[in-house]
Length: 188
Image 1: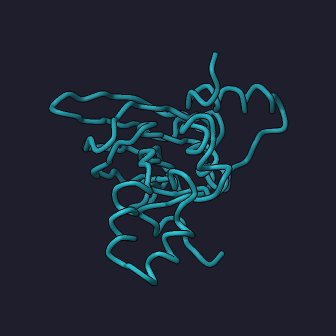
Image 2: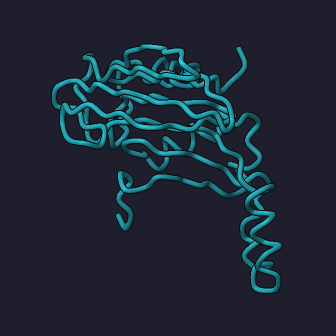
């Protein structure tokens, strides 16, 4: 590919399907599944598919285009934390400690699992990640990371599915349903 996903800090999705998804969590899931971000990546979506139009406006009135882009265009979905490369099915992928306003929430992500932690728009948290042996979250296999993550309308997605995304042949439907439920992509 032309872009190394591990090098991206922010991934912005634009287009009618993403902009008009019934739930923002669906847009986030589409971005994660389609692009396969690796490491720690902030995800945003174009609110009403206006980015192409802002490009035209920028040629006429750059300051106005920047103002609209920064204040009305982007919807911050949240942050995705995911490993680089394949993960061993059934095992532990990584553990996390998410510290928000002095309160720490601990969790573990199994290989093939998605965990969603709430973190609202603009809210900043510190996350400490302890990958399983052989798992790389951006600083080398098995090496712990401490980083800042920023919330959004969906939150922080801890994605233990590995890259490239592989959907198991056995229990395919159940697996896809479990992933969608983890992100609250569809009403119960």
